[in-house]
Image 1: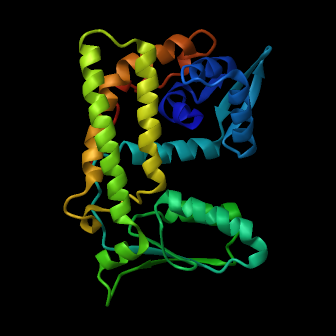
Image 2 (image 1 turned 90 degrees about the horizontal axis):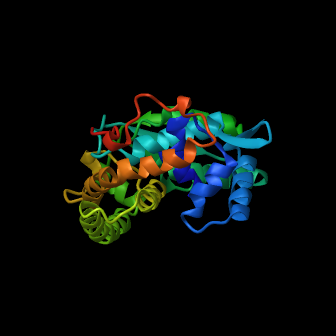
Amino acid sequence: MIFTIYGDYIRHYGNKIWIGSLIRLMKEFGHNEQSVRVAVSRMMKQGWLDSEKQGNKSYYYLTPRGELRMEEAAVRIFKLMPHDWDGKWRMLMYTIPEEKRQIRDELRKELLWSGFGSFSNGCWITPNNLEQEVRLLIDKYDIQAYANLFLSENKGPQADRELVEKSWPLQEIDRKYEEFISTYSNKYIIHQSLMNNGQMTDAECFVERTNLVHEYRKFLFVDPGLPKELLPEIWNGNHAAYLFEQYYKLLAQSASRFFEDVFQEDNDMRRKDKSYDADNHPLIIE
């Protein structure tokens, strides 16, 4: 949830927040001060956050690694339609020795998050242009001696869609989108009615918008973001994206107003991105 708040709010306000303000925001979700401090400490150890003192107050901000991950996630979360494909496959092959098993396991998690599919043991593929991300991972884990990245074309005998079916559980992902649509279409209708009647507070909108983004961003861990040429003709991911867009815009203004009411008391509002407008979020259409 802290990741979500940094990604959907704090990154537009200079990437930095006083721990007291963060505790106040997390209180809306039922989290106490101790649990927030423990989570923040863990995020620092993992390299996502750093801190600085201003007087007797501690402020926490995203590291360059954290900023990069947030920007990458935002592009994927707010992309409404699948992109066009250049017809190329990116293939990562590695043979990481057993004594570096922990690195291998961490790399697998990173590749899954980025959208790679496991074609076979030690061989990962994606139709998306992720060369930069792969090079950063190879440098991060210092595995230049064990990995190779190829740009290739599929010459058969299996068709491209067969490669997709072998590498990603599309039917399972589609069912997850169907569940999201079922749950959040009902919530959207209810909250639309409540807001039209002035029966939702800004704090409630903040909670609902944050929960919406928090749930929707879980698809980053399961949906590889395939181009439209490789998706089924009927793909629930497209419908889920439009529902997310409409629901997000419904809650955006009130939610941001609550965030700013909390944030402005002990943080620098001058760091807010002047081009940021939550009510007209730059949802990406390709």
